[in-house]
Image (cartoon, rainbow, N blue to C red; front, side):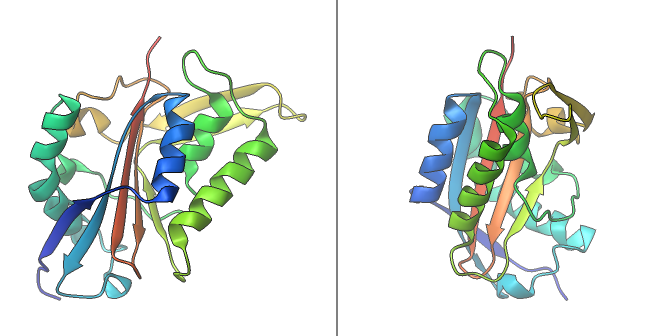
Length: 195
C-alpha cells in the first residue's frame, strides 16, 4: 500500500464530544477537537495496526493541525511524534481520570466511571461496527476490594512532552485519539492538571 493522503477538516464538536468536554473540564484542563477525514482509502480498510501506517496517519494530522492547536492552546504541538499504540476496546484515559480525579477534584466511584466511559464510547461509535481508541499515556489503577482506596500509577508517558508543552507531565496527563472509521471522524482529547 502506497502512502495515502489524508485531509483533516476541523468541524464543530458533536454532542458526544461536547458532553465529554463538560465532564472533563470539571476535573482537568482540557483541549479537544473533532475532524472529518478525507483519504484515498476508506478508513475501515486502513491498517492502523501497522506502525508505519499509524505514523503516516499522525504525520498527516500534524500537517493540518499543529499550527492551529499551537495558536488556540498557546503551546507547541507536534502530532507527528505520537508514539505507536494498539487500539483499545475502551477509552482507558477517560476511565483513569474519572477514577483518580484531578489535582483538586473528586474521583468517581468505579461503577459510575465505567458507566460514563461506556456511554461516551457508544456515542462516539454510533452505528459503526468499529471504533479505534488510542490513549498515549499507559497507566494502571490499583484499588482496595471495595474500590474505595484508589491509586493511579503512570507506567509510560509516551513522550508526551515531545508532543506539546501543554502537558504538565504529572499523573493527570493524557492525549486520546478516537477514530470512527465508518464516519471518517477523528476526536482528539488532551488533558492535564497540576497542583
